Length: 111
Image (cartoon, rainbow, N blue to C red):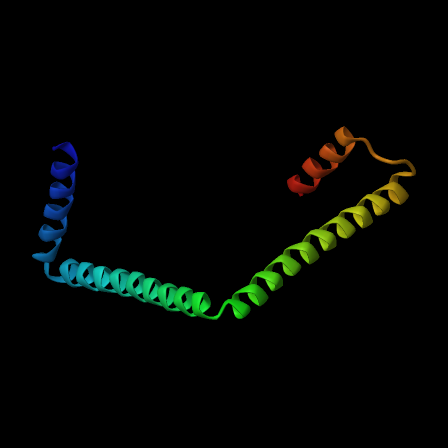
């Protein structure tokens, strides 16, 4: 019962907006664009899903590409992190502790 009254009051607010000349037109266009975008996204996802279900080799290739991309980005991130630690070690002359790294990060964010 309560959910119906809340949605009814929201619908009433939108109906009130429809009677205000300029705001009503903007509200109509906003609702039209929102429903158009949601409908197009839903239709596109349904078409893609059905195509991939009927062509499983393409689905497997796409999943393999996604896994490869995730692995590549993880490895690249680890290499970048190791390079940053080496640069900090060269700069400060010793390997920084976790606390020192956190302080350097805080100082970097402050600038």
